[in-house]
Amino acid sequence: MDVPSEKRFEKHIESSLNSLGYRSILPTEYDRGLCLIPSEVLGFIMDSQPKEYEKLTVQYGEETEIKLCKRLNEEISRRGVIDVLRNGFKDRGCSFSMVYFEPNSGLNLEHRELCRKNRRSLIRQLKYLLKMEISGRRSWRRIPCSISSKTMCTSPGRSINRGTRTRAGWLRNRRNCSSSRVTTSSIACGRSGTR
Image (cartoon, rainbow, N blue to C red; front, side):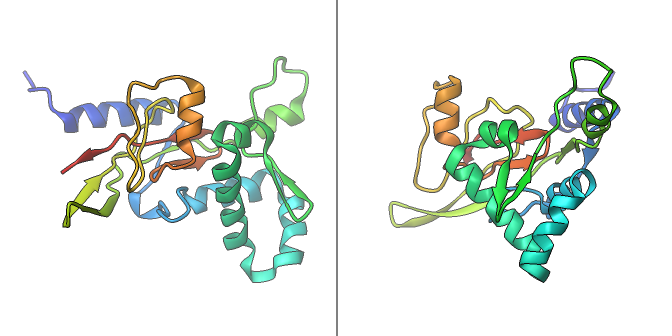
């Protein structure tokens, strides 16, 4: 009989999500500064909204990808993840949706096709090290990425009460989340623990 282990549990979760259509992503693709996976976000936008992306490319030129990711990060910081997912965001007159929800009926084939373009991705274990100064000595904080959007997260110099599980508390604290990432249809925050 196999002994239960964290590694086997992670593998089971990953394979279960892969069977549901999630794609495994390498941790190196995660941009810590932007708190998202640029290749997934840009791939989704280019695939589902090519006309809007092309209009933005005319304005930004070669810097379109960088500026678009920065704008998305700013909107998430200002309005929160849930609002950006529900309402999308705008940049220089171009409107972008970040997720297409499943239609109530199968009559709208165009919307159904857009819903299929959602990208569901996961990172098995994201090691995110932040250097912090505590009492004059250096320490490291590891913040692993989680699949659940209801877990809490912390950022350098801030502590968040883990007992706050309300949506409002999570949204309020999301603005300071160091390990949040958005991949079109999934949200991930990490729960911290010092080591």
